[in-house]
Amino acid sequence: MTEPNTDASTSPVILREALDMVPAYQPGKRPTPRPGVPSYKASSNENPYPPLPSVVAAVHQAGEQANRYPDMFCVDLTQTLADQLGVPETDIVVGTGSSGVLSQLINATTAAGDSVVYAWRSFEAYPIMVALTGARSIRVPLTADARHDLPAMAAAIDDTTRVVLVCTPNNPTGPAITQAELDDFVAQVPQRVLVVIDEAYLEFNQDPATVDGLATYRAHPNVMVLRTFSKAYGLAGLRVGYGVAHAPVAQALRKCAVPFGVSHTAQLAALASLSARDELLVRVKDIVAERDRVVAGLTEQGWDLPDTQANFVWLALGEQSADFAAFANEAGLSLRPFAGEGVRCSIDIPASNDLLLKVAGQWRKRQAAG
Ligand SMILES: *Cc1c(COP(=O)(O)O)cnc(C)c1O
Image (tube, rainbow, N blue to C red):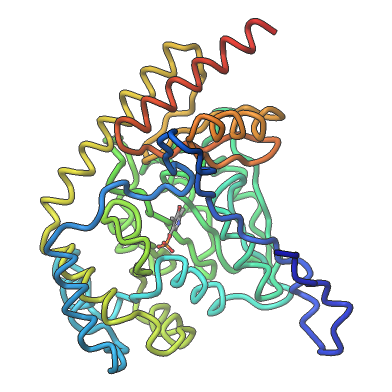
């Protein structure tokens, strides 16, 4: 297939200039298929386990009503979430993944001339969403141990800032923020600025000192939380997540939604997943145990890893990142390289994690041999 011509300057149609500033999303790749070599996809932080039978049954049931529009307000899912989280229904916004809610909130708060502060490197959707509204990204480098530099982020806020995005645990590096750090930070943020706590990997986080996003939202009218069914709940393919924000903010977010965006299938699957929460959390525990095994194995090989609280590990390979990812791909393991920075390796089924340990060990030996 030839590449389509995407050069905007060759089109007679007037396109928004701001789009020139929008970086392309690089989705995690599938491994290159090789006859006789088992291959694994550890490039997108997906849950390696398929949905539970009860969730698949809900998906089938929903399929029978695909001729109808879904419930635009996701009433049942909103009520169930409100009950389980102990928050008012008015404060819940269900969207097409938490990326969908993120897009709504950036649209609700920013336009050309405004700015959004976030750590870098962090979730790669952030610069895309910000650039789409014509707003400016203010990126604050992570510390040497790959954590958010919250004092520097507070200092980076200026009169144009509308939103601060705080990702904990941080994708792609893994460390979580503590409640004490976040409290100090929020105290310094003007109340007109929305603080967004992105908790996509919440369920994998075992750090007892970690942020309680909901408690922080309850305590501050300018704090909201983003959550997703894509990772721990294993519904990445159905596109459903939610935000918890104080009612006036939540109402603004709803105005920015694509009408009927969250499918009936996604709504029923999310409800079935909440009903099967305990069963799903057993899988999360297995993934966390595998993460700890991988971290121990890599550390023993001599890798210096940031403290991950998510379902991935970060190898800060710098200029060697692309080469290492290609080396792993040769062995049947697809990872997510960030050129010049590092490689994010998602925790997968044990056989795939074994392969990660194997290629990482081979790489170190090769480097040592020069
Ligand atoms: C995966 C991820 C999300 C959300 O993904 P959705 O599938 O859109 O819900 C949000 N934030 C971070 C940091 C993520 O890694």
